Image (cartoon, rainbow, N blue to C red; front, side):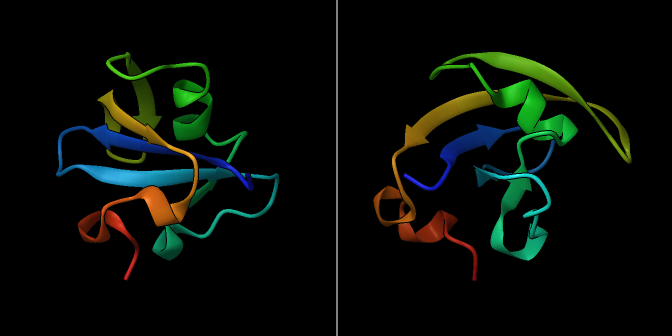
Length: 81
């Protein structure tokens, strides 16, 4: 497994993000480094878990809707374009 895949809901629409290694953040591919505020808030949560994270637009609340082992398990609608 390359990373952890979290389907989350927040103030916007539902999204899936992959947590990757240091310096590998690629927002268009929905990849965020483990030390980024969003990833740090999500790591350790399981399905149904909720958290808050500081974003450029202020504090945001997130809930983990699902966890996936790899991008192939992620529904097509949630995969990066």
